[in-house]
Amino acid sequence: MLDLLLFVALLVQSALTQHLPPIGWGSHSEGQQPLQQQPDPSYRPIVLWHGMGDSCCDPDSLERLTEMIQRWLPGVFIYSVQLGDSLEQDRQASFFGLVSSQIQEACDNISGVPELANGFNAIGFSQGGLFLRAVVQQCLSSPPIHTLLTFGSPHGGVSDIPNCADRSDTSCSIMRSIVRTGVYWPWVQKKVVQAQYFKRYTDMEQYLSKSAFLADINNDRDDSINTEYAKRLRSLDKFIMVRFENDTMIAPKDTAWFSFYNAQGELQDLKEQLLYKEDRLGLKSLDKSNSLVFSSLPGNHLKFSDDQFEGYIRDYFSQKV
Image (cartoon, rainbow, N blue to C red; front, side, top):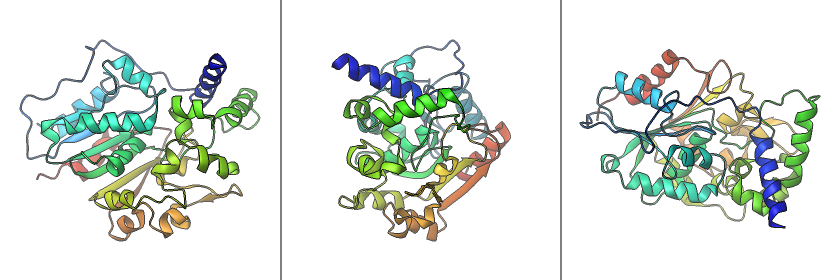
């Protein structure tokens, strides 16, 4: 039976992450990226969290972005979230594990960094942005987070297989069938990261009763609203959500702005949902105070230029404290 459960978990994981773009791997020492010896305290420190299949310090992704940020903001202290004791463990953790435990591990790690003790800004890429929002909402021990910037993050959940817009694609149909069968199995919900933010809008009863992460972090359960989540999210100075106009990795693409499907399959903007109307996460309050930013970039998932990235850094992170 255990073998069957593991097999189903692997099938669901494979389906939810199929067509994952290849990640570049270069030579790099194992463990956390080197931190600056003499950080400039005039810039607020920045915490990064990578996306699926990446790691904290890959030289072709987050390490490169770290170097660019430090070029634009000389001396800024940057901490990149790493789960586990090595880059490979960190990469594996982006696929497998209980997300709530991963959030707690990140909270503990962040709380142990002296340079972050007076507060920090945060940037999350894809699912890393969703997880950083969870850090804001759930981490009792975390220093204050001032600005949260997320790129292509599935804040509203995902409802389909990556890169499967073509409904006639046979392989996609097979993968959808696998996901429908097993995504809410308890074993899968405990083991497969992407399953824990999958939201099957055609079966909300199962989602609400069995989701191990998203239903909680989005306050989707009417009978168990956590008012602390809204209180903590309202404490942000800015929450910037970047959507990619041609995103095929997360479906719907507008989930990056909390948009999602209703039971009839119609896409609902955030402001049409109870999540906003009842201010369950504090998003309405942030919006009314001009602290919630809906931003959009052309192109596919996480396909931004250096100049575009620099624009966000200078607009939201260059102010000295």
